Length: 430
Image 1 (cartoon, rainbow, N blue to C red):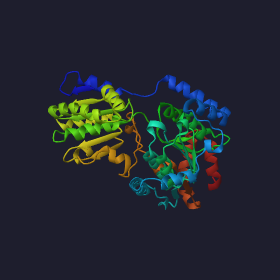
Image 2 (tube, rainbow, N blue to C red):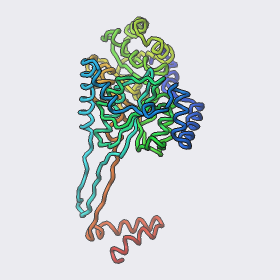
Image 3 (cartoon, helix red, strand yellow):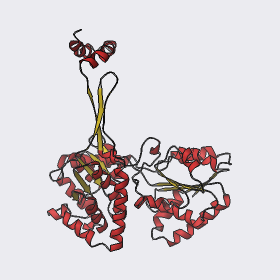
Image 4 (cartoon, helix red, strand yellow):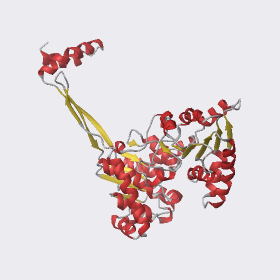
């Protein structure tokens, strides 16, 4: 665990090093992914079957080995314990309501010169969702990706998920039923992303791919951007907690470990103006780890990437937060609004002592698919807009063309594009 203080002479250099730490895939991953994608593009289903047997120990032989039916998903949903089914339904309802409010409005206006200008929004035809398997099999991620797609109006929603040794998380199947997934395929890894992008004999291609995954999945999405749309290139999870000394150290330690347990490369950072509180939280981390079933992963994350930063005053915190541009920022103070107003770069902000980041992972409503690796400086969390595109339209009558056409002719001539100018001139009789 790294301990820094803004009072130390070497703080600026140490903090810049912290900000620059990428914690993401290396060149070997990029090379391996390129080979896998080429194989899937060239051999289709044969490549998927070979790679799935190699990496997931699952043979793609019969149709049931390839695809999970809607009936199986429905049965998984109906077999859930009532309290768990109710929790999944509550999460789905809140996610749907939040994302319905994001739907953009079409525009259609006539300006003062008589030019009709507008734009219409339409969903993509097909979207592909990657859902991790194994340790990271999260039904919440399926809901967070699938529901915005359905709200946007996507007609064909395809999920790919690895099923190691043929095993699949029944909660994922239940979530797929609840979200209205159209196809669910038993393939994972970079090869599954390639199948969604290029299409194979069985799997038709999609227009947009979203969803979390490991370094190979993230790299596959990066390499395929342009062939398809993607949500983002996501790296390891991050949480930044800004807290004063009036917090319960047990709560803060639990908050920091809530992201550390995701991945050994996850990063948890505490900024506080109370050195004694910082000491107590650091001690409490060890106690919390001793109680966690995920202690091995969480401890590696905290010991390798965990950081505590002491500031003279919490007024210093927003500038540090903006430089870090973290995925999750938690403002554990009495009045979080002034800090919130000063923070410009964050994937999502959790305001006040009673708003742990974990509530946003499940039932708050806003999407938990968020930019990592400082990408919150220029990108946003997943929304319905990731599954939609905007088409502008223009309509002029003769009077409107008379009003604006001469200016367009002048600009076309200035750019040395006489055919552009000519297409306007012939209509104006020039």
